[in-house]
Amino acid sequence: MISISHRRDLNCAVQSFGEVQRYFLRHPCKGLKQRLIPVADTEGNVLVVYLM
Image (cartoon, rainbow, N blue to C red; front, side, top):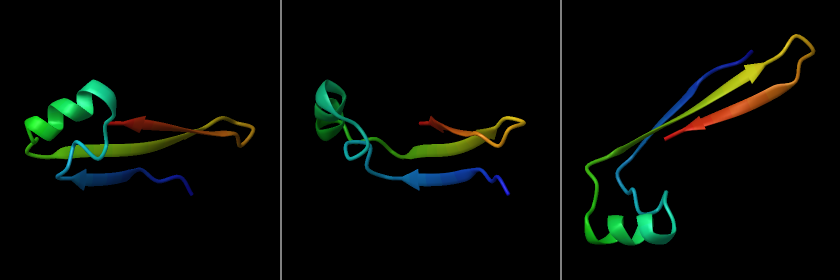
């Protein structure tokens, strides 16, 4: 069974790195939504797409 996973996080700095992380440490975000979407082909191979 393939399912889509959703996650909400209130700390954008933890989910970022480099300049973006430094920005979020100075300017906290109000929230972050993440989504993992598995995609399968006809041979059963699965690729997971990560959206933020």
